[in-house]
Image (tube, rainbow, N blue to C red; front, side, top):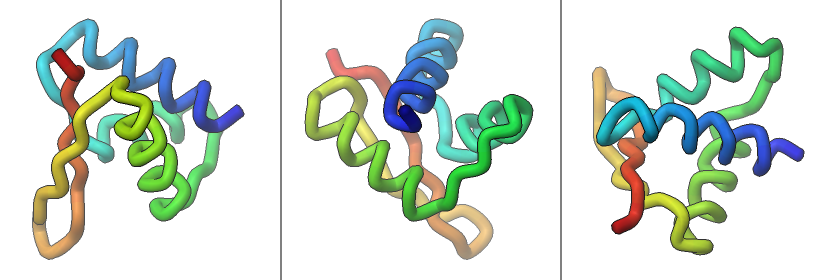
Length: 73
């Protein structure tokens, strides 16, 4: 269920812009009252990358890991 919800949010956001961050995804999930841990989000992002839906790049921002997500071409 979480995989589908996060996948739909990523798809919606990537229609609007070229790339998004994991912070964007977490903000929308929070607005929908869906609580997800950072480790669960990372697992979902990796799963979506394995299925070649998205490309994930790890970036350091303010001393913490943020994931930059873009659509596979």
